[in-house]
Image (cartoon, rainbow over all chains, first blue to last red; front, side, top):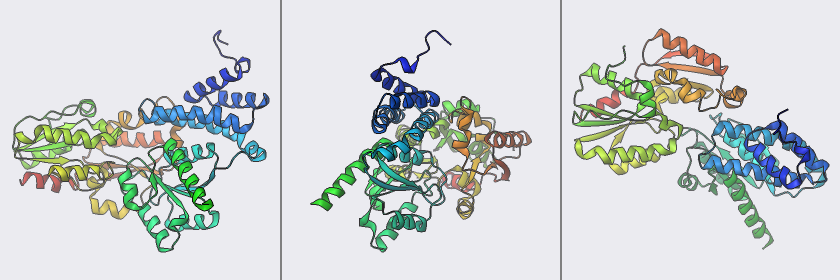
Length: 231
Length: 218
């Protein structure tokens, strides 16, 4: 063992949380699992471990990805580490009644198999307290609509990486309009070749440039929707 | 067909690009990944009035930078030539490059990307419904596989990410512009490194030729 090796269990809570942010940044899965378990043993609620240690740490990763400091491989390693922590927390969150923000159905559109960004969004949405049903890749309009009708989510999220597949989002939205169900859902879209103008043109509620923006946008729209319902 | 002699080496085309020779009345502003192919087509047709400037091919690692880079090159060079032709397809710009070229009054190559126009845009569109699980490499990308795929995807440092990154693909299609057994062997090795089945497909220059014909006819 190196002399300068950090013993996580010897750190104070505040130090451990900061160390977990560093470990998430470095994609250290085992350290995240250990830190998660230590905080739980110290009596932290699963929700606090999730939000203060994992989500806050992943936010730093997301910001540095957005700013071009981190790249896809590093973000994937961080996401793997966060997933390991969430795997421990998920059953506990259900038991302890953590706040629920809303529900999202998400998937990559037909003809597109790229799912890195979509997976990150799904993970960060879960981290933010949303229930997420991930339809995976290559989703036809029928598959989206079937999931909407069955799951009755607040939000539909669609992702595409290719210029050739992103127009399919409009097919889904237009079909929702035809069936008179467009206004029942918040539609968020994302993916590398998309932009705000495209999101507006196809009739989405918003284009989200990254996972952090997706979470904030989802929270804003869900709050607005709830206010409308209560108003 | 051998590489055109005037093309710089691939590392230069990836990192720096190619400055125009300042000879000829039509300027092609192209992706560095197309330099060899453009120079070969130009030489084969004797289109001496075409000059070629290439932007660094590694702009493809940040497609959001392509439109601004092309615009800057067009604005910088257009006064020195009778006309400018942009040898990029959409290339992940989500229509922004097309809109910018329209605004600048310059023509560009049709299609979503070079995999499509090398195959032929119509043929590529026809197979895209069934072949979207293919990962494509061109001659340039086979030669520059480490610079464009292996290292940027972090597989040199974290080989365990391979299946997260490529697990949804089922085959690597090498779209060959030239017949080169050494490149074919390398492409086969690239497929093995990514854990994908391998398919060789000779495309030649595809729709790049009629696109350059349009430029040359100016």
